[in-house]
Every structure is written in C-alpha cells, then in structure tokens.
Length: 78
Image 1 (cartoon, helix red, strand yellow):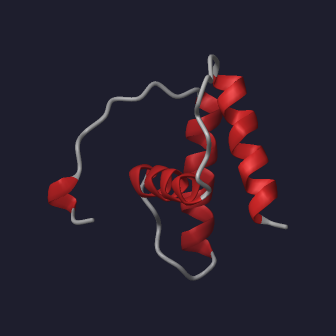
Image 2: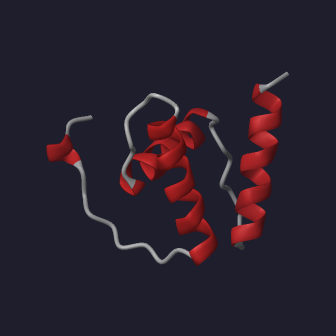
C-alpha cells in the first residue's frame, strides 16, 4: 500500500500505549535498525492483526476484541 492510499485517523491512546510505541521505536534504533515512527509501529500492529483473520462477529467491548485477537494469535502459533 502506498502512502497516497493512507487515510488519517485520529486515535486516543493512553500514556502507557504511547510509551510502548516510543519504546519499540527506540529499541529498533539502538539495536542497529532505524527509529520507527509511532504511525509505522501502529500500522505494523494492525497489519499483523489483519493477517490473523480475527473474527469480530458479535464483539461488544474492547476487552472482548482483545480476547479474540489473542485467541487468533494462539491458533496461528499451533
């Protein structure tokens, strides 16, 4: 997907999530890679989740969606 296909999406994240994104970006840089942007890290997470084929049918809460994502991940690791 090229950058011209991206749509800007405002998202509200906790300080904990922002710190995690910054930590991932910094670890990439100090270990010989390049510093990732927060946006790049979020895109990578979304892309990985999409590849898990998560079933979102009937989901009512954020926690329930998280559980479905974790279940799909564990199935993919078998």
